[in-house]
Amino acid sequence: MTEHRNIIAILRGITPDEIAAACTALIDAGITFIEVPLNSPNAISSIKIAASEFGSKAMIGAGTVITIDDVESVAGVGGKFIVSPDCNEAVIKRTRSLGLASYPGVFTPSEAFRAIAAGANGLKFFPAEVLGPKGIRAIKAVVPPEVPLFAVGGANPDNFDQYFAAGCSGFGLGTFLYKPGASAIQISENAKSAVAAYDKEKI
Image (cartoon, rainbow, N blue to C red; front, side, top):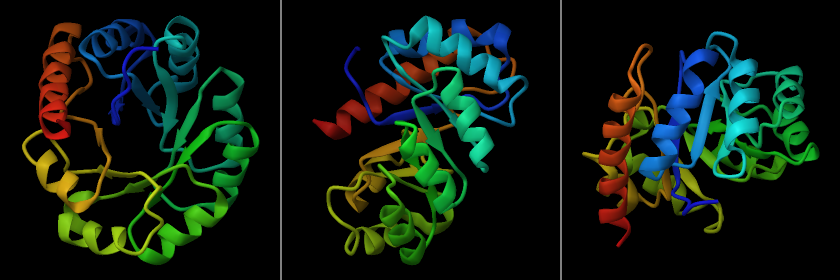
């Protein structure tokens, strides 16, 4: 697998016909953490295509996962990680029991600790723009330091520095990288911009 950055590309609205070109653009730009939200058209088909064609080069997973059945469907087509909008312990535990990585959405210290206790590999602070770097910094102070924190919902290359300073180790990028109908060239340009900003702050 190529160098791994903690940038999750959130391809909400992508279709099976678009997924291969999008994955190629992202991977070539240096983003190897690719999420297909389950409220996208035929999302499981897209995940199956991506996992089959790009699984050796990237981590392919699903977002907006809210039920155990969803987790099992994603695992069944080769997905490797699960991102949820909420802290659902049953979803987290089933995700881990199937050998997938779990990144549940949290907003409060209570949710953060519930997610960690259930086995989460990392925490998705969502919506990050509401909690803000100050809120994340306060929660970061009390959660185990080895748990990676991702800012999702409002994070973009213009504010990576603020979220890194608050203790985040990564980001989920949605509309900054991809909007339905975006061309592979547009995705590539956006991804290169995100990677450049990320690498600048990580140096």
